[in-house]
Image 1 (cartoon, helix red, strand yellow):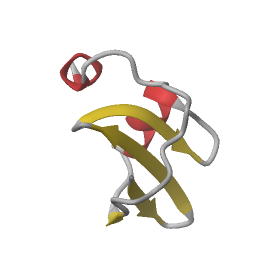
Image 2 (image 1 turned 180 degrees about the vertical axis):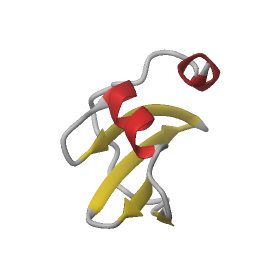
Image 3 (image 1 turned 135 degrees about the horizontal axis):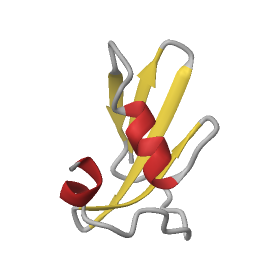
Image 4 (image 1 turned 120 degrees about the horizontal axis):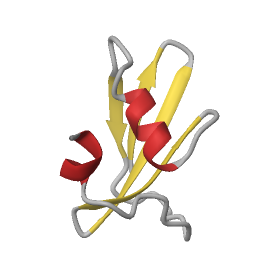
Length: 68
């Protein structure tokens, strides 16, 4: 899990076998959460390779399609 932090906001990105499959922020999930957190200035991040994986899959398109 990659956690992005900017000010008082947080966003968690979950990867499985190198593929992004779930994103959650303080108020959003999925693609809207990803698109919002990518606009944050001054991001700090942490990575937890042993974080428990969620069962929900909110990212179903490839990352390059989402960012296009």
